[in-house]
Image 1 (tube, one colour):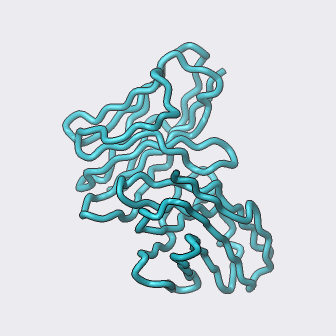
Image 2 (tube, chains in turn red, cyan):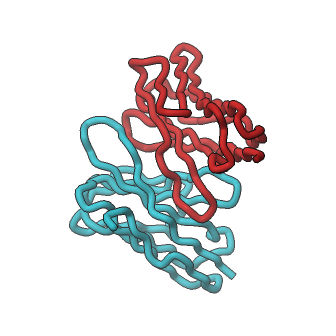
Length: 111
Length: 115
């Protein structure tokens, strides 16, 4: 089974706050764990990704935390900005190169 | 611009008509994907190619859907006898085959409205 569960469905944070989005998966063959960002009318774009040999990766204000034993990974957005308002998807893959997208989290950052 | 391009960007058709979408991937990418996205949902996998070979097709796809990638370059997605439930954004993405999974580069999508 390649089910991916993403939470929360929507998130509202104040400017400067921390946004946290979680993704749980079932397939232990997954070995690449990306987060995609999508703005209205645009295709998704890779934000940050992690492989299972590390537990955390940070790029600027964005951090992925990976918990292999719990089969979960999360996206942390520090110092959230109004420009971060978008929909975020996790899309793990492994083995077959078929990327399974989560249902998305709609983030709104209030100015 | 060397990104993924899709054509047409918007298509309005009547139920029962056939439609075809085209995707031109990034030139050096040999993996090409088609996804379908409806409002408020994540992209749903339809099919993917490595070069000209179609390696996997979603069981959710009916026989009305067909995709091709002749010569391993551009790809087309055809929907025959369209139904209102086919209304969605059809996304194309490409990636380079480097022995492990990597970034998907998406086009801006082709939005289909079936009346």
